Image (tube, rainbow, N blue to C red):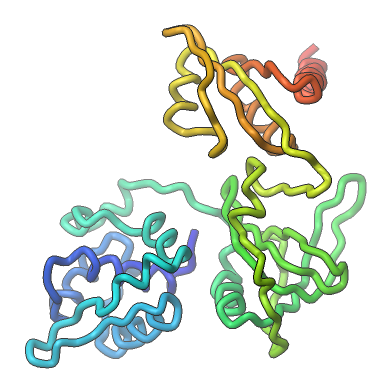
Length: 304
């Protein structure tokens, strides 16, 4: 779940962008009172101006006031076309306009929440915006070992949500390499005054482009993966592709459909395929088929 401060920025920006005309503060305040995501407090004028300032700092979007009518509007909406973070936040967290009609709808519209990890989200986003390093106290899970705490210095490059967890990708100075950490394992975090330069060739979308999920191993080659989905699972994959490279190559109406992908074989891909159970069959490559057999046999042994 996104932090409350940023959610309020998104709510205000979304309200003004979707209005056919500038809005007075009284109307904005009334909409706030009806907003199902509000925190039961009245929107004060001073707080409203703080949100305007925060929106400008975060998104580069200016909320101007028409002094003649004392009404507010978005001066430069075109900035959002160039700001991927802003577009993603608005698309993912904006409340549909009609919801404002129904007070108390938050108890009837149930969204999937991220249980942990949002505690330090504000500080991480601020550090990313200003390109300053973080000092992180981190508790790692390791198989066969007790949990242990470590402290390291981290240059935050990108955030990603996957499977109800926030992940932070960045450069860990002690390891002299890119690392991915889970926000729910962070015990403490401090923003430092040390600035860093984001590599000019870094592109978060390209970094994760060849995987399902967040696990990236640069030593793994991209493979052609082919699966057969049976029954209704084929329709699910058509409407919600497993990966952006998905292509349907063969089908038999009402029975099955075959899909191909170009991606790396990772534990998260295997987990996704296993979650589809008997409705999906891996056709190639052999490496993936063998791993699926191994996992299924291990599961079978639990129930003998």
